[in-house]
Image (cartoon, rainbow, N blue to C red):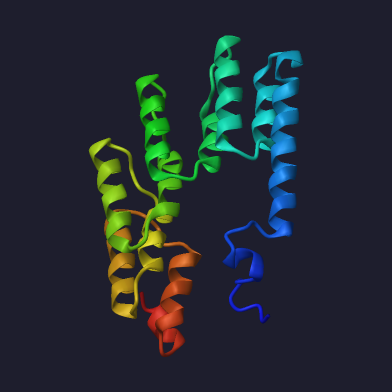
Length: 192
């Protein structure tokens, strides 16, 4: 049977292909090992960060964070950002960001940038940016580049670059690369 766009006989039958099973089992074993050693760890922020960096699943990271807190070691931005990287749903991500706020640990714009991976268009990125504005958190080039990524013509890209400049945000190489992909010649990019 031909393998068309990743469809194999096993995926047709809703089974996990053997290669994916191996990765999943390895991740589970890795997380199980982390959790089995959690109580024997000398409680330091560095050691917990090391464990968080090895976690494969958000549920494992949550247990590690809770253990940190129980040992009176308060998570810092690095702790939360490692946790945020593992979260696979926007609602769960928003709950953790709220938790950070509730604990008087104001998430920075890089913490909210994790929401960008769930955006499906420029309008959704704008909604995230509006949320940040209401929280009095300044957006950086990462957010504007996300809008540009969803733009489908050079005028839309130019408009976002001008908006960035108006807000005092220096467009980075990514913004100009997106513009160059639509430009007819280099002078269009140079004249921005």
